[in-house]
Amino acid sequence: MISETRIKYVRPVNIIEQYVVDDVIQVFINNRNGELEYIVSEPEYDENTVYVVSKLYLENPRCKDLVCIEKTISKVNDRGIQEIFSQQPLNIMYYYLKIASGYGALYPLVRDPYIEEIAVSSDDRNIGIIHRKYSWYGWINTNIMVSGEIVDRMVLSLARKIGRHLSISHPIAEGLTSEGMRISLTYGREVSRKGSSLVIRKKPPTPWTITKLIDVGTLSPLIAAYLWLVMEFRGSILIVGGVSSGKTTLLQALLTLVPPTRRVVTIEDTPEILGSTGYWDPLVERVVSIGDSLNIDMYSLLKFSLRRRADYLVVGEVRGVEARLLVQASRLGHGVLATLHSEDAVSAIERLTSPPISIPKKLLSNIWCIVVMESDNGVRRVKSVYELDEKVKLHQVFRYSRVDDFKPHDIPGLINSTYRLKQVLDEDDLSNELLSRIEFLGRLVSNGVFDLNSLSESLINFYYKLVEEEVLKSNAE
Image 1: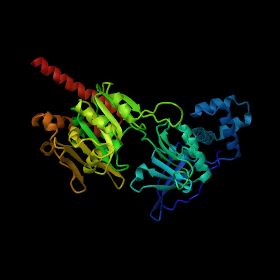
Image 2: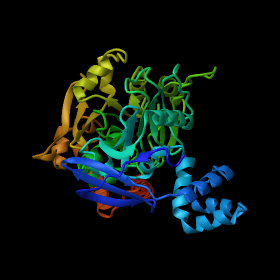
Image 3: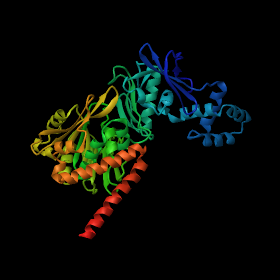
Image 4: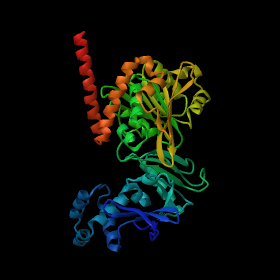
């Protein structure tokens, strides 16, 4: 089981970066004549390592850490095993966990926190990855080589991990692992000409927050403050963009601005959203391929969610008729956030008004704004923001260019551009609300407040002060 995968020895010639994962996995990012390579070196093993790992796994296949493995070793009445373990505890733990994980050859890649996606098919031989630090490059080949037979076994093993049936009669499957990784599988050559294949999208180690996106330049503090106010007035925000443009990332980050006293219902086909600062009610589509169990699609979940007193309804990705219900929900006073695969605002409207979605165009005026995301050489950012008026005419509020950065740069420029926010606030109040949020977000970014828990605490204090001000104002009246 340990030696079924071949890791080809590649001598690094021009190392860009090297680092260690889990204390035992050596990783080298190598530049070979302009082509990036991901070179991984696993810890050494010998016959003794294989013997001990096999015995341990047979004794207890459910260990997750070194403490459990040590307890299992102590129960094994074999001094030879205990002596071998004492000589190479980290190596034995690594290979035990590699086998117990069910990921096989993919295990060192799964463990690397910098890897975003993993892909391979039976005909590829080398496994490919998207690296978080080098996403601008695209897919990078690794030195991990697998045969078609091993890929067949891997996809069947992964199908079991996500609770899906995979066979010649059901050759595709997708789902989420217990670790939160999204997996897409094909089996044989029924639908994939390159044989069995897999794509794994890993979740980020920590949820993206709005402060982190500001810090990395995805959007400006002014855009963040604008979207925050749209959400506070329960407007409808549609985030559009191409593949891997950062749509879900921005959606996740906006949910970190929800007032802590508000209820958020999220609806997804495969769960990717990692939480909210509000009361979070996550719902997930259920697809059943065998048996008599009931399929529960996104449309059914959305209808169901309308009876769960949600302040905000969030759909991970709009694909079909559920979009009609979302538009109706915004008319009923729910805040709505959703993503849609579309290159720009115009094509987003065309897609929403065309089959199979077919929303009457006049109803799209319920959408307050459309945020267009782009990936420019691996850098994901807000490309533009548009508002829709009563006649469903698009008005550009923000835009990005390499020359001017994000425009408008200041509050007066935004007030001049926005149509929606001036419907709910006069210009002086709007200016004050934007300024307070820009200053608040700026302080958090300067102080490095990027994690969800710290941001949530800061938001509670922010809203507590607002409540105090309102109480004092009402008492004075």
